[in-house]
Length: 485
Image (cartoon, rainbow, N blue to C red; front, side, top):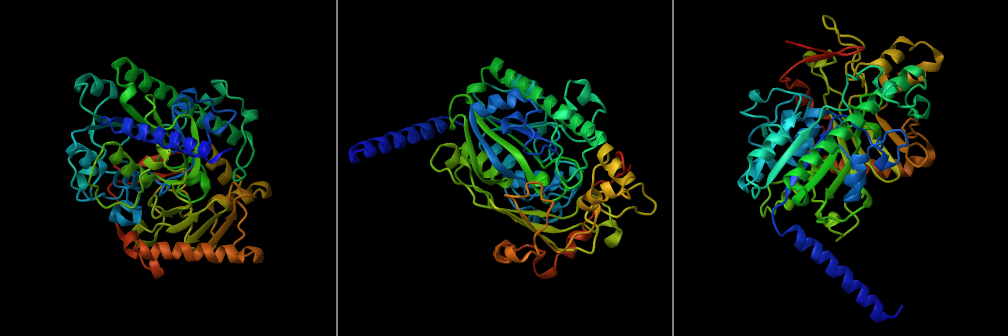
């Protein structure tokens, strides 16, 4: 190929990128934010799962960019949602770092910024949650005014831009027992993750989980229909992701991949972003707020840790992040220390090849105490259901004890997983000599990040986090959840 031809091709690419960028900034787009509840990557046909058919998510993927390495900053509902609202690492949000913790109204959110830019901002179903927002200076949910999507669309002028958070409760527990099999899901085709026992009880539980993902996909189709019928589809950017991973042992409320790695699709039916693309670079969901604000043409942003995804979405670059930093503090009130407030603090760095985790209080039980006197709590950091019940009921069976230890047993202070050989994060190689160099490098990176980001847990600190009081209480049992009135 001649130099002239190369220059010509390069010029054409630049012109296309400029045209895409100009199209994006022609007017303020509407933004529809679809947030699933406890949906792990890769449980969608978008990501190649052969069982979970999600045609509406596939439609979104065809009209946008699908990210294969998107991660929740914290694998627990409230802190994850607070981080997305603010674009900040959870440990910078004070009490909001914990489940049902207070998000101070003085911390800027995209809701406040977008309203100043003329946006109608609303949500439906599960917004910032769980927790009691009336106890923290808010007069409404931090996600905005609650209203049904169809009602919002029918009420606002067509030229007024909107941001709508659709927070479905799917596929959160409790699952409708037996619905998966009844809906036609073939239990024999389910690939059970290596951290769970491959038994009928678990296969049935996963099928019921998949049923809820399919129900979520149906609702995505309904949302698209509302946009089409109102004539607003062309000027709406659609963002779909989840707050954290699947509600099973060794997943949700853990920094393993099935607790933090989530789907992320960003779409535009008027081709305001790249079409039908996959991107493998790393994304932390704190990156969504700066992306929302850039989409809305906001000139001055509040201080954030997130990075806008717009350069990737418009083709200016294919690389966003080369790693993500992850964290976890208190999930449920499940340990006797600190008046039941003791969490299980963890920090992690996830790269293409490795996941390195520091367990900052390894003497504690990662899944919570087996029981707490005077309460029905039973290993309360693991959601109740058939899988949890099977493992607990059979923990003394030699064939099940391995899975009990993975999901409920104590852990060492350091964990390292070779992701090329261990996609389910079950073989800790932190003390294997051949990985010493990789562990040293990752540990240095993680500790430097903690220092640079003023993490309260640096150098053994952070006990104040365990003393923060929740805004509401609930107990997780073997089978379900019981709310405290």
